Image (tube, rainbow, N blue to C red; front, side):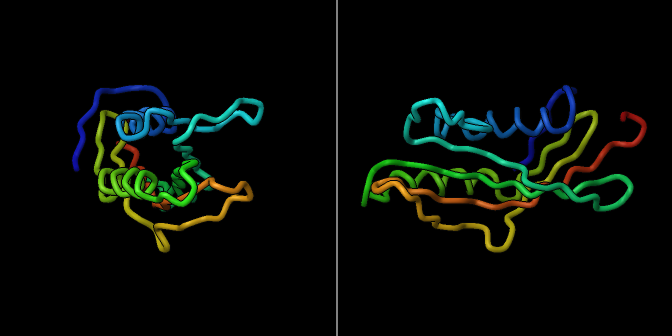
Length: 139
């Protein structure tokens, strides 16, 4: 998939905006962080950028983790469908605007089934490398 978007704010805000536009149609409860004092609405998706490494003088590699949560007990159809749909859109995504070019590709391992301490809660995690290339003369 290739997206061409208008000029916007900082890199990380642009990436969150892009991901929100992609994930919210698949799972309306999309958050960058779920407050611990808020009752959770299932299913939901949380994204995280745990680290960023400089690739060279004009690009960065960012690890993106997409956590998908559901409370359907042993019925895995909903969580697997959401996880598949998110992966289908994110994997090999190419995005460009006036300040940057971005590519998203799956990391290894890219799909994990993670246990949760609460009975009946299902969790899947998708992992990607997000390469962000700064466009010269703009930043």
